[in-house]
Amino acid sequence: MSSIPTLFASGRSKECWRTAATPVRWTQRWRAPVAENADFIGTMGTLRVFGVDPSEVDGDVMFVVPWRGTAHRLIRANSRHNTLLVTERCDQLCLMCSQPPKKQHIDMFPFFETAVLLSPENSTIGISGGEPTLFKSELFEFLERTMLARRDIVFHVLTNAQHFNRHDLVKFRHLDLTRILWGIPVYSSDREAHDRIVAKPGAFDQVRKSLSLLCEAGAKIELRTVLMKPNAPKLFELAKFVTTALPFVNKWAIMQLENIGYGRQNWNSLFYDSSMGFDVVGKTLDFSISRGIDTKLYNFPLCTVPDEYRTFAPSTISDWKRTYVSNCTDCSLRSECGGFFEWHPKAHGYERFGVA
Figure: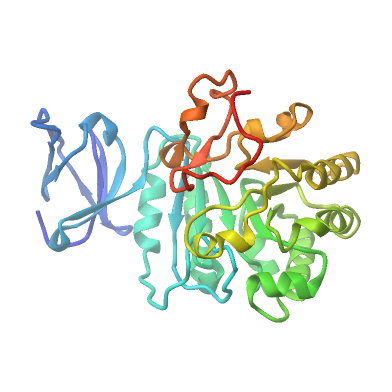
């Protein structure tokens, strides 16, 4: 294979590009797997995938780096929800960050643009980091080009909303904002508590300004609140803040803690057992929903949620990182339950847990 980093769409009659501006057609021939290996052959060479059934990657979009012997799967063809990590840099150090920031950055936007163009119809593409808006100009250009080329695709952009300003209103006008959901974290109605959680003074005031700006632009907004020991006691106060100061948001996601990155390091001081302390969650749900805020519980195993609130706890963990524990085997709700992140500790931490 050529030494040039290449986007490769596996399967028959697919195309790939070295860059977004340099198309190269692959005349696909597919060899039967031998011992869970498979060759995908095109004009630029042969891609051999080891240790995987070829049906599991057929149609996927992979970023191939020949000199490293690696192939990174960017788009899973059998999933309508894929996320692109655009940078590992970030200007916050959240106590529970699942993707701790790094200093280095490699601009992958040209490759990501091609990957989006090759994605399945009606896909939802997540944009994540680090903090994507550290490269705000590149992000806006990427969104504008891909949305013009693929009008069937929608985006879910996760951002700490620290870098928007009034000049961005012009840029927003070039985007179909009905097809972008901006996921923005607000952890407390107390500015000092929020700033402590994200380890950035002034973050709360800036996120409020950005939310107002996004509202003015007509953007769709998903508030995201990770439930933790530091903010659980005042979750109801946050609900009152959301319903009075931010009634324009499209949804509010209250999320259980993910045991990875800083969340794993700080697990004992952060994890809030909502199975025993659900009263604060239930009270918050009752209030926010009664005030017209579409509120959901993300990453909550159903058996830890009282029956009357389970309808607000959809399955939200992606299939490739979802797992269940032995207690889940005979549960009648397993097909509806999101289970756990694969990296959740075996001692899962919920005191009330079991077959529902």
